[in-house]
Amino acid sequence: MIYGPFTSETLIGEHLKKHPTVRKKLHLATKGGINANPRAINNSAAFMRECLEGSLKRLGVDHIDLFYVHRRDHTISIEDLMVTMAGFVTEGKILGIGLSEVAPSTLERATKVHHVAAVQNEYSLWSRQPELGIIQACKRLGTALVAFSPVGRGALTDVGVDPTKMGVSEWRKTMPRFQAENWPPNAVYIEKFRAYANAKGWTAEALANAWVLAQGEHIIPIPGTRTAQHHAENLKASEITLTAKDLTEIEAILPAGFAHGNRYSAEQQGSAEQYC
Image 1 (cartoon, rainbow, N blue to C red):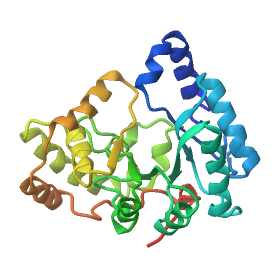
Image 2: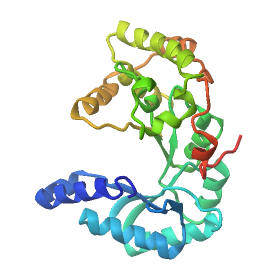
Image 3: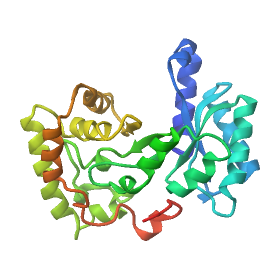
């Protein structure tokens, strides 16, 4: 919802209006719970409905397949929030409930009110915190883990990134792992991973996505992309079947915790729940 803000939903809605038969082939997912301007988290029943109705209107559809709570508002209990979301399911305006960046305990409490279809968390070879609880909780509760940034915000790709060339407004520039004291050692690790992938005949991004896929049948990587070419490269992950030997070799190149610097700064961490 907030991306743009609203640009993504508007563009998709325009496409669906021109090509209505496409809707039956898609599972639409979007988010609510964050006010775009000024940016603020709000999980109140009134605001969640405002978000939902706005998304439905922009997309030009009568229901959304998966509607996420973008971030949890701790002024409202997760139980009350889930009652609101469950009401949307009853109305037929959403088919599934999603949560984002929540702790296993939050998921446990939420599930007692209504099944949670998906939890979105950052998960990749350089962000492996979900292995400490949320992956297991999702599997136990029949919830999909949707892994965002599976290629490390562009770092785990053949093209890679160069923080010195990032624009002034580039959000990654403020993330600890891309800053001057941390990026050089990170780049050394990643170059070894890139060389390993290429030696196998794969791109680094395809291998990074394949690694995420190999971590569990209930885990779905959701790489961001701005071009059809990048999308095609990401899709090549489905052609890779990693053996136990491959996984052991990858672990030796990028061991858990190798990344220098936190994934978020203290300010960026915000409402992303921590549990370890």
